[in-house]
Length: 282
Image (cartoon, rainbow, N blue to C red; front, side, top):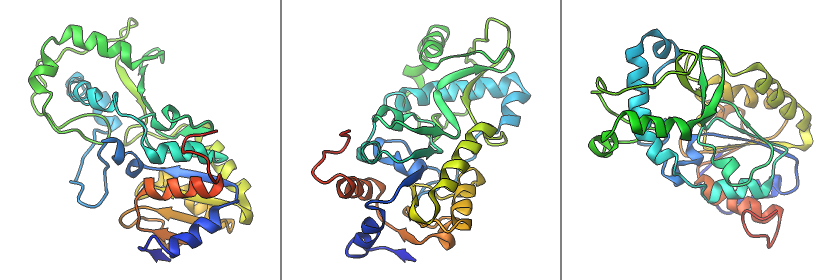
């Protein structure tokens, strides 16, 4: 059932979710109010993110990725949680599954979070598998590429934390002390989500049963990494609420589909579940 009007129909959805145990699944649409563009929202341009296979194929591909990502980080790294993130932290679902890599749920104070695709604030060596801080790498990139930000800081941001930039030939990329290539510790297109993350999410969804609910906010569910949890909830009879502007691949499975803004709906839900509590309160 697709519902565009926030009232009175959204009131029925709020009543449904008011006291049920919840698992939440979020996507890029939740972070647009923080200034991070999404992939597939209404009016979003077609985007072709670099695949894992492209990234590991050549040093030139890694140079291109890091040159763009270094610019994009100046914006994504400074993004702040919005009302939707704070509301979900206040709602405190049994598990918050996010497809986003921006870390804004954690910054808002959410407690039980599975970042399906990792966090762009972390870096991993593809050789020795050592992880390190993105902030430390950014300082090194600044030192190796003086003036890069000043010359290219105007280019358009993209949802995965990089930018649209063609000429990256002069960009210098450091390597791990072991000699290995550095990669953001996120799941690229063409990579698989680590099995332990998937298992934890499946377990949480399966535990909901008919008395709980799965809430999807800001995801088109285009990729299977998120859609599979909607399918699993549907198979066990768990009510599914999807809040997203635009169609999703899970619409046919939804108990309710709301065409409203994520932040406004989540703030309303937080108030229903904890009347009188300010958003973000514990």
